[in-house]
Length: 322
Image (cartoon, rainbow, N blue to C red):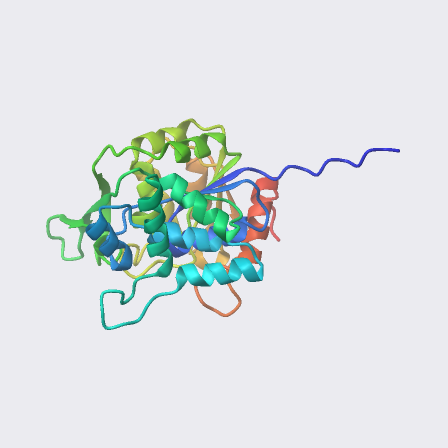
């Protein structure tokens, strides 16, 4: 009897980002990749995360929570725990607008005394299809040099929540501290991956910040993994208002000029000039893949199944028009 052929190994993928953008990429990647690791920004200073960060001197848990929710198993168990993580209290007291998942994560950190171990325990409880890691071991502050339309001198905007809604053009991004300790497991996940996925998400405050953690940036430059940049479906009101798809890619190149990129994934509806974007991608060593990944309801949100199919094409080298 002939032994059955072994199942082909799916690529090991490490996805970088934060917030709703990383939720979108993970919701797609979990459908077609194992093992899967999320490396998450830890610079949030607003809302429930900011309050817990200030009060308890911990990493802001919100973006980590959202990544875990995206990886929950697609079963009654997983969906229920995902809903629990995302549940926000409404009250007239101090619990108002706190997310249940934020409290759960911080409680495990206090009980176990280790950030990564706490996140792994939450993942086990949820049946998460992947691992969630912080990009750095300490809370970070984002600073941006912003130029406004009035042509005045550069303004320094401090804090992720303020950078995300700034109405000027961001020229330079920084982290405080400037040389934060990277999460060792996150660095290893980048080095061990077959593919690294960067974006979508708030371009400056959630995506490009990963390139400012020196040890993580070094791993991104030295890894044998191929790199896919996923562009947003629309410029965001605030930090990228008025920027084209090509402007997004050029901002990435400006903050990491030596980073080799293999693929740039974009939705045709979000690209103003395809030839210009293809040239910008080629400057970084990448090929441009155009795929419809937007939901059919007209919103600027990714469809998980369409995005998963697009990632499969990227990983398998299928770059022709579909």
